[in-house]
Length: 88
Length: 147
Image (cartoon, rainbow over all chains, first blue to last red; front, side, top):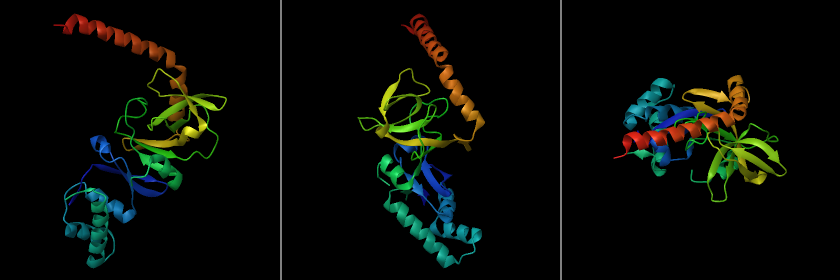
């Protein structure tokens, strides 16, 4: 799965926030508040990856189990999908 | 995620957004840079770039030129006209912006402060240049492009 729009991630008030830029900002003008894990995954999701690939990247970056990593990926993807931000 | 910009600033205190249009060019580039706008926490002053809500519901980010009574006289860096804006229409003030990957802090950047001061003092020559350029382009079109 891949993000529907081209996002950049910036730090605002000490926390990562994503906004769509370029022509995509006409379709999505909101901002997405993230935590560090979310920002890491968001950065990867500008390119297409499966849930398992994202979970594996999370395991490599952070010291978490595969099960927890997959749960975090599915949680984020569920939230993004409900907001219409995933190009599934 | 669908709440209005004013609501988001009120709730979160600060927002990240993308500027649309050319009225603050060359400082802000259409849909390319990112702006960090915060709820005003101090009296606004000349040179501050503020986000205000027009009567038609459009949000506009322009620079304060001066104050007249209860109104602010505001103009975009790339505009030739002023707007009189009431203080209660102002919902935020520009804290900083990302130009490409570089963050410019409006309160700390010496380069930004110099730009802000120079931009207002050079307003008349720049307006004259734009008019001359527009007239020259009109002549060029009549001479070389008219079929």
